[in-house]
Length: 321
Image (cartoon, rainbow, N blue to C red):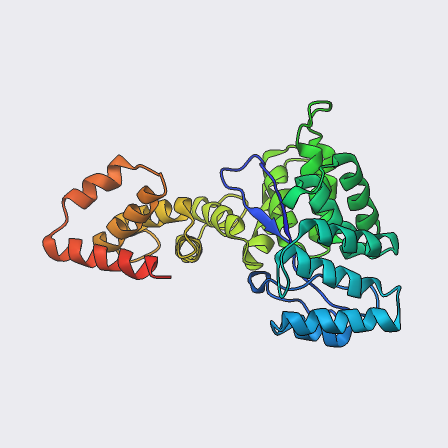
């Protein structure tokens, strides 16, 4: 899956955003599946289907066949570019990916414009960096309704390039537009800005709604932030049990902030049944990620041998995956 930029907003948690892939029928691939770029026109069905199933060599062959039938098949070009970028079925080559993306982008393919913009922005694999052209490509893709491009324009508006100051109002506008298209990362980012009143009017209740959308979309940062809001009753009715459930979900995905918060909940019995072994286990995991907590460390020192063994076993089970 094409990675997107990281937004460093006002909240304590941030997450690299992941672009979801959507084909012409509206079918959305799960972000963790590493799906192919979405075609913006009639897609090369056999090539796309082969890619979805992990038959990358077949995908390349079918995309090439589609081009032999239609030399201007932009979605096929974009798919080939993605195969080269990720090294799926071919030797990875960002330079070769750039060539194919550029061909498709010149034909108006919005996903190719987005993908090429990322390559030029990051300079991945030896591709020459070109921030100005990357921004232009994102703007073109955004005009075609590409949520990822809108999101990245928001990130670029916040980033300082040495010549301009962060423009939170512009970023908020981009994030909101992307969020309205269903982008979970953008929903999180807009909620964070709205929650702090940066670039958007301060509105905690509305911010909670957007951050919940991010949490519902499986954005770990959104899960953590919405859990905090639930626990504190900030912009939403207080619900410690629901907060604990969300902290648990994010903690299981190795988010150290969630692990630390969950450890405290188990230590105090708030939102969950008090369990010092679980508190110790999540504290150990958070500590391994760099979060030190003297209060929780003191609890660990007081564990019985049985509780300590249970904590170590819980850590072992979590780190197996």
